[in-house]
Amino acid sequence: MTESVVTDHTKQETISADQNRVELCEKNPAEDFLRMDRIPHIWCPGCGIGTSVNAFVRALIEAKVDRSKLCVVSGIGCSGRVSGYLNVDAFHTTHGRAIPFATGLKLANPELTVVVYSGDGDLSAIGGNHLVHAARRNIDIKVVCVNNFIYSMTGGQAAPTTPMGTIASTAPYGFCEYALNLPHFVEACGATYIARWTTFHVRQLQKSMQESFAKKGFTFIEVIAPCPTLYGRRNQYRQGVDEMKMFKEVSRREKDIETRDAEIKPGEKIVIGKFVDRERETWLESMQHHYKEVLGDAYYPYTGAMI
Amino acid sequence: MKDSKMATAEKKERQSRGNVNINKDRCKGCGFCVEFCPTHALRFSEDFNALGYHYPVRLEEAACTGCDQCGAFCPDFAIFGYRYKSHT
Image (cartoon, rainbow over all chains, first blue to last red; front, side, top):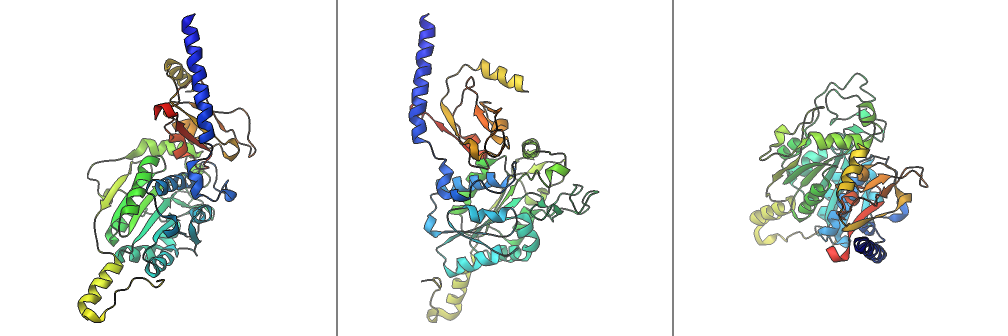
């Protein structure tokens, strides 16, 4: 009898504590950085882009990034719509030209934290050349590449990142080309920070984004995301959750991983983790360094066109 | 699968250390929170929300630790977890 009374009492306590706390926690912590008049967003149920945005917003909050000095640039595609949903200074550029726009922003006002948030088709296919040269020059921008293996917005055509053998709308008998190994590619170009996570590894992704905000130079984070509507449906993953379960099973994080082993093939492991973390002079620094050496006192250091 | 989840939930007669706040009309029913909840404290509702999807509801018999894993997964910002004050 006494026992039952005790349990009732604890239950009541829990409920009352609950009600007190709910009043304090009515708002999702991510809402501060989102344009809530645009939510619910247009991404399909089971799409991983929303999860990556969630991790990005949490990273912004944790890293205490100054919102007045933050700018998000995105290209065309499903993930290009991220700039419209974030309540920060953002720009939705033309197809593949997110990196050139961000380069201009960063060089005009070097105080800004510039983030390029775009998809695999936009960054590696149409904007591939810009990715190469921004990484080579080591321009201080943070690139987040949402890789869902396919051109989602235009109807599921095969992209450079589509794994060999998978089915796409332009490859009904399976895709016959080798997929682009993005971390290896960007490392060869000279990026200073390279990581790859899937949308299943949300905490690690958030931490990686936080690290990239503190990092100087060209940083590249590849987020592997499910696309149930156009990729999963044709490749045995009927729903987004099925693809997330696949990521959970096949992703491997190993010690001393190299980007050359990070190629994605269907049915094989997905290598995840932080691949590269190194220091290199950024483009602005190397320019100033060089001209100071050549011109001496005649050179006035460049501090940005906006000041 | 569902039965085993229920069984584990019943075995753990622990007190919840937190709870989840669900905004059901924002949910698109992707199921990430229900599938990947570490304590299996969520299930799909039988009702539909305004968008026509089954939204997650909290299983009262399972202990929620308030770890906010559901909140980190949610693509639609519809759910988040929090800890009770006495346990933080």
